Structures are given as structure tokens and as C-alpha cells.
Image (cartoon, rainbow, N blue to C red; front, side, top):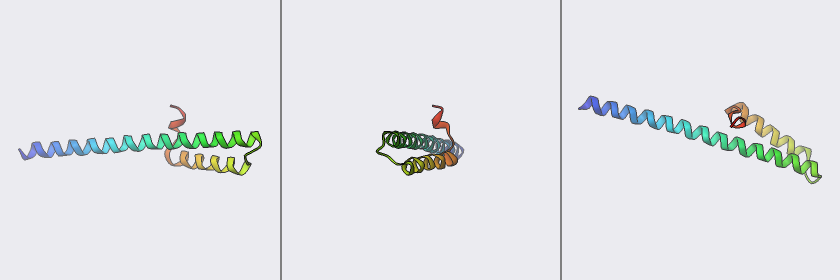
Length: 77
């Protein structure tokens, strides 16, 4: 009986770990998408004349930092 409970506990732990990993991936993709939208909005505002190159550069740097940390998978989905 103890062996069965140990295996069940291990499977449950594995499932929790996989679920957390998937959640982290989804959150990173959402954050990347949000940063990409902010970059687009900053660029659009700059081109329209009511934004600044600094804001566009900051948005680009934030996006590049996110990509360096989490990869660019969100760009391909």
C-alpha cells in the first residue's frame, strides 16, 4: 500500500511541476505579446508626431530583455 501511495504522490508532484512549467510559459508569452504591443504603440505614436524616439527605444529594450530571458517563441505563435 505504501508503494502505491508513493507512486501516486510522485505522479501528482510531476503533474504539478509540469502544470507550473506550462503556466510559466503562457505567462511569458503573454508578457512578450504585451511588450510587442507596447513597442508597436510607441513606434506608431512616434511616427504620428506625438511620441518620442526615447519611448520607442525603451519599449524595444524591454522587449529585447524579455527575449533574452524567455526566448522569442511568442513571436512565432
